[in-house]
Image (cartoon, rainbow, N blue to C red; front, side):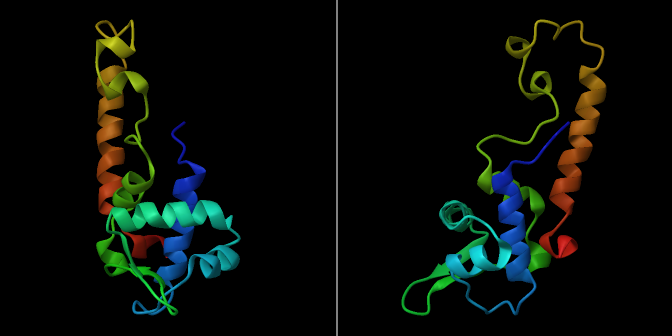
Length: 134
């Protein structure tokens, strides 16, 4: 079964926490980690990836921290997953690429149906926004 990584789960939890407060609020990594019971060091790395992918923005200085770059209804769950994961979330390795990944590629009877499931999953993740999980 397709399973999101713990890092993606932590990212979603942290972003949900941020989305439940006024958008102009700035959060420190330590504050989010404590409020959401997420390991600080791991969360700091996750927040950097989210910043690099322009999901959140950071503010420097004494009152610095992180805030959402856009409104929650403008942040796609797929964007969050893609910011954290090295590879695209797929349901089967053979569907990801080509013959090199599977010795049954040419005779596989489930590749096309799995392709449809993968397409539906992609559409769902792209159409689901952060505000829908808040």
